Length: 217
Image (cartoon, rainbow, N blue to C red; front, side, top):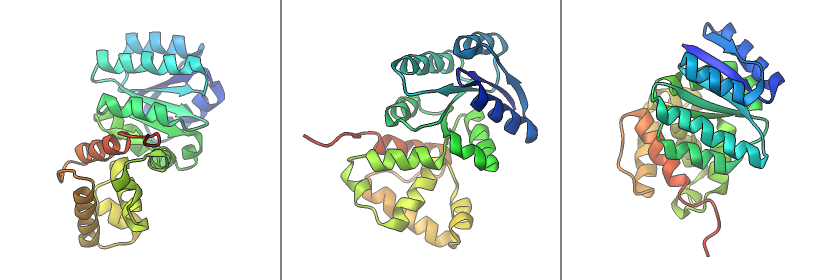
């Protein structure tokens, strides 16, 4: 897996590049900020481009530029890396349909999860960490999601991250049959068709959560 890391937050980009390299990825850290990263990515076409973003208005424009890179080259995944979580960024990424991710800086303390997220993005899936998913679910005003119980919300969060039923069972210390039952019930409550493919069902849940992130009139 070839990863290119850069952006205007150099310390955060450097930490990510070091982490990816320690897990065996071929990592290129690009100095010079966001513009230099986009130019280099257009030339070298890595599997995943990781760019740091901030909360400013200018960063909203950067996200559009990064996603245009993804749209122009479906083989190039894009991951946002930030010291904060902004739900509107998540909505923009979900709309792309895959090959995208969003990691909060704190996720670097869970390196194995970060590497798995990058691999999902490289294969066309989603690489959202638990803080990002939690933020989206906390902001959603979709009534079916807001009414889920504690266990249901935890299971559906892991579905949205892209975990399979057996992996969810291992993480929650449940048996797999229980996870399958909960996932089936949640999808029914959300009015979604059951999906076997982890990427498609993650997209289904994320899209449903992103339908309404402001209070109803």
